[in-house]
Length: 597
Ligand code: OXD
Ligand code: MN
Picture 1 (cartoon, rainbow, N blue to C red):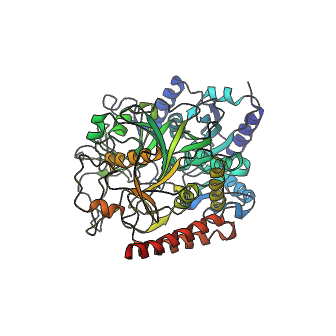
Picture 2: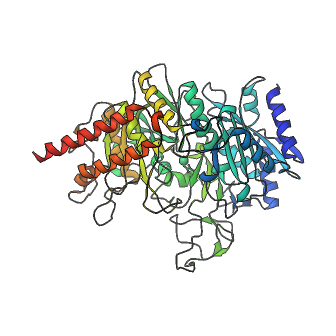
Picture 3: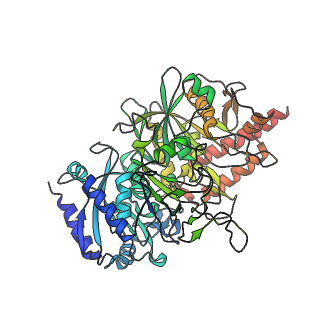
């Protein structure tokens, strides 16, 4: 069964890139293993010690190509205002012309791989099909993990089906000729000059968030930067929630958390549906239903250990590709804040010889693994993967959770008053930059719904779309906000985090069922004393009060920041958000007089 549009496009792109040959990826084990052998022979991949790491490989990217390059990422809409003030914009014609020069002849002497892939279960009416053309075997092998790829996808596409046209070439990995371009109006993505996952696994951030958010706007659904997880309580009831956090706030860890002992003993269980992306639709029953469009994890290795995430460690024991971690001479891998002592020697992420204790000229320790080193692993290998993770209908959401990293101000948890207030809370989300991100340490960045780098259109329209969705949902999930990172005056975290976060999720879900008590604050509802289950947890005296405190004056300053952030959207900003800002301001002002009286 031939899809003419696909055939023509592949020919056209081959004429541009001029590869020596074209190979269609069929999804078979034989083809995958042949590609692995070829990549090992060329040095693109290194086979790890197969007794320790069966089916696992190592890859190192160019040293200037280790993270998503937001400054080189563009939304190319005909009108600049449709990309909005928070995206880089380029005129589509100019973008095709400029990148066309970089693609011209870029695959000479190389193979062009054609990777048909499905985001979401193959054949589901909610899934989206893409085809990625790439000259990188590393990209093909990663796409075979994070998406469902191969011949079956072509069958699902059929002779007339439409698909996202994804073109990628490493070209010569020149940072001055690197562009990550999205053409939402053409359902097309062009990425050139990079070999780093977030820039080149085009099914992930580029399709499943930037292009999908645009499709969602026009088709009436939401593509979100959210984990999806199920929480099973002792009665066997499983409730699902989706949660948005900016990068580097522990989404993968939360999605796979291990319940604290008293919860485990009583029969609480966690079921992972996804760790990064949720596609959310209105179901026939009036609830929201969420699907994880991916089939694998592309997770950050440093910091992953048996305390932070034992389920991730179990997931990556086999069939995993490690990128930019430390490699030892005997085919083992290691990363900072991982398991065990560092090896006596090895090769660091940048290819240099490494041993513990190395420091740069200024005396800063030199890490063996890049802080953004990654593992790519099949989600099916996760010991607690949800039995529902491939359900084409998805899972029904009882709660939506927003969160960020704030050392002050933001309480451990609050429930918003309604959908509209929830949208305001998501739209004003923020996080402090960590060492893993570019920018000034500790600086607060506004990151609405954790979508700032991923929204494929004007973010003001995105807020409007959220508000409109809310009017259409007969049985909306409740919307909450969490902050695991609040610190005391001496700079220590007030909340233990990790598995203990279940205590907060448990309150959230009981609240959603109408079973948990709360008290009202200007920000929303916080747990009433005794309603958050703290059994077995030894918090210092007064910690809970500090964790839930609402400081009126600091919040009034924060609200001014919200307004400043909104200003850039001008008249395109939905007025509801300014009304919510005003209402919150009034509540805060009254709060002070009430608490003073
Ligand atoms: C990611 C990110 O890689 O959000 O998931 O940066
Ligand atoms: Mn992410």
